[in-house]
Image 1 (cartoon, one colour):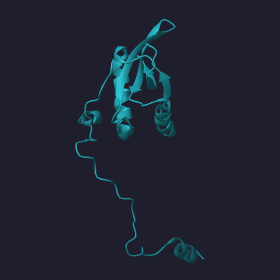
Image 2 (cartoon, rainbow, N blue to C red):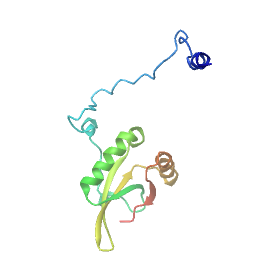
Image 3 (cartoon, helix red, strand yellow):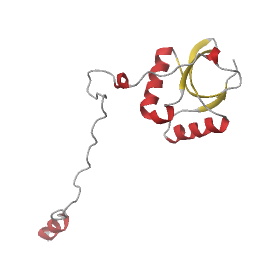
Length: 139
């Protein structure tokens, strides 16, 4: 009986052309995954718009709130790595806010035609478990 079990567990030789192991894709040109530097160094510069340059009533999307600008920029770069195509024609907005006596930075996205466009954008981010909230610029 042990020989029968061993024979049943051995699938035999693979058929011609079978993929025995999932191929690993080649690294993107210009992106270094070694610990020699941050991957974000390969990102092109990002457009940024100051909140005071945005017309009241403009549709934006908030993707997070952070303790300082450096954290917000790092989060933006991480989003660009994950959602590069979606963010390609968008600009970063860093808006200082205060709540409960504490200051923080709202990380927002600019570049939507209307509310429906902002909601579609958020749907794509939310589907990948990223935070996203369509907002109306009030300043």
